Each structure stands twice: as C-alpha cells, then as structure tokens.
Length: 137
Image 1 (cartoon, one colour):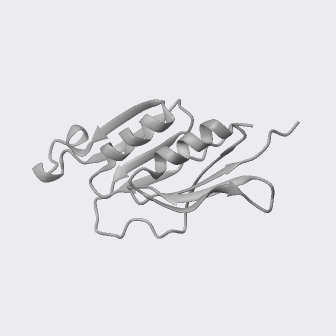
Image 2 (cartoon, one colour):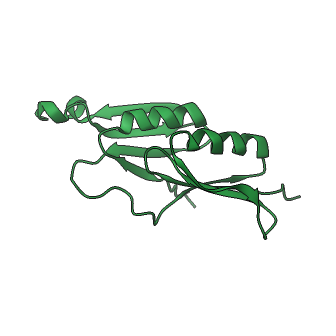
C-alpha cells in the first residue's frame, strides 16, 4: 500500500518568508520559497513578493506555508502544531525558541498523565503544543 502524508499548511499575513526562516532556524531542513511574481508574471507589483508556496522539508519537522491573499482572519485557535517525543533537551530548546516574541500559555511542567507539557502562541500567531514523554521500550 502506498503511504499518504499529512503536512500542516500555514497561512500568514504577508510575512510568510520571515516566519518560515524563523522555523527553519529552529527545526533545520531545507526551505524552498516561491513568490507569486516568480510564478505569474502578471501579478500586480504590490503582491509579486508575497509567498505563493513555501516548504520546509528534511529537518525535525516538515510543513508548508503561504501568504494569504484574501482578508479572511488568520487562525482561530482551533488547530495547534504539536511537537512530541522523548528528547527533553531538544524539545525544551524548541519550546524556548518558539516562545521568543510570543506568549506562553502553559509553561513546560510535569502533568497528571506523567509527561512534561506546555503550550504557546508564537510571534506569528501560530499555536504550538509540546509534550515530552518517556521513551517506550
């Protein structure tokens, strides 16, 4: 059976390139960015540098992004990017980096289910949850 991939696709308000470079700095990987102007020469001048499609692949996480081209509100708090694993040092560092300029809603603390958990909204208004568990044998 062929594998199906699920990748989050984030939308930004004209700062997609900046946001994706921020995430690349945290997660590593290769960032590819294509602007509307590169893909369609008839794009109006004020929109030509906006990101039509960006992908961050090959690092700790993989996802896609774009600059929204309409006036719909970005984010509604109903979806969170979730990082989970057992490498406490790595996940704590990612949590700290993601929180720079953002808002920590729940600091990383041991929870009733036994894992360390925290959540935040980063400076690009993206919700993140981090869960640090123990390695299962």
